Length: 619
Image (tube, one colour):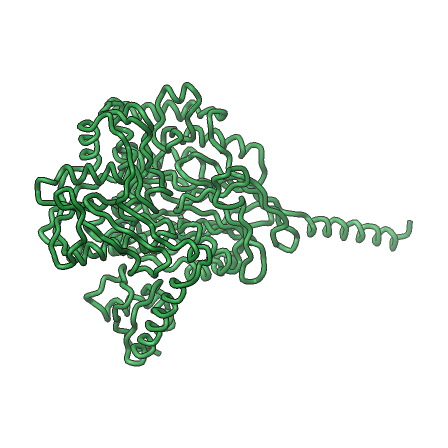
């Protein structure tokens, strides 16, 4: 063979080899979970603590020891694996109540996470407890859209993004937490939260510039916001979500939608969205195959139900038992019995009158009725589990009420009570935790009307009879200290509540005592809360709500135009200082200038309709 032919043969072989590489698909396997909520031990079908007998009978799910077994097995079986947590690992069991994040840190470390994003409940005990958690972990936690001041103990303890190498491919992981974390939890004033979509548009560009060839958004914002992120943020391939406890699945008839949910990004590329319920009940597993053009070629998978077929990791079981020993005797204490299961399901208690809501508000009102208190209001999001029929233990009550809230009593005039109810039903469609469970009170709500005008027929109990609320009369109210401080949007409690006492007994103690007194407890629902949304309006998703919303929007726009011409801004739904700084000052990082121009305004809480001073733009 001539030298020319030899060289030609070698060149063709090299070309063929390079073409094979160029055309090779890249397979990425992502294992994920979200909203663990301190479910260190297994749970039952009600998402509450599972008894030893139920474990023996194979009726338990999840728990971190089962989660570890599943992760280890799938990691061995797959190539190019990432293990991700989408936030809210804190708050939900006595393990968090006692160990304040240290138990979660230890067990999450053993799972071998590649990345974790902060959730809103990570701030429930302030910045310092979260900082200690971070000090005790070896995996990276992403702060995402949180702006953390230098005076916070969190400064320097988290990362903006993570990049993992898989040969020639680099997978970037960016993150975001819900922007209303200030209302939902207790971050310090040194922590501010940006709009997730606005932030992620810049974050994706940054991680791509750092070399990422594929991008995952690891989020704790809820499924509806995840959909916005997928369709409005260019450059994302996969959204791994949490916060709304959404189950996406192809196998469960209770699923919110398919797994993965495929949406179209701004540039026309396919984006996969996944979420795996909560409480360690499932391990999500999605396989993404990318073609040589970098786009998704296929996306398949489903959450794995962590039932009795998965054997818990023995070493982890032993360690859990060691940590549980000092508190297990107290948790096992029987405080009463339930004649039937008490429904505390998230879907129930955030949208309608629920059995657990009636139990808790009845207990609250019973405890303080001798103090001139006639109304109880409890946020549905504060109820974290159901209780099954039979013996009720201290541990079960703590699982339902894990936040260590105390009773708060105060006085409100009738119009402020109505305003509180309006806040409570303002985000029902989003499954928001502010939904008001009540006692001593009845009300109706209509979702076809715009937020702020949804309630009607508000009645207050008086000597066994219900009478229309007097908007000018003063009523005694009992709630929890989180809501009394303005949490979940109940600002009216903080600003207008009179003669407040926020240091009552723990809510879990109050409910435990009430269950003992009423044992065997018979759960019930009545007519305290009535939805009166016209069915035809709900079906059309238009009508009066759309017209009313359009009218309100036009009115705000008109005022906004006038205000902006005079160095003012009238706050609209969705506004925050980050967005306003970008709009008026050309730089979102100048949000502090607007904060300084409004010294009497809490920068974390903007109310629709209020007027802000806008400083002049500096060239």
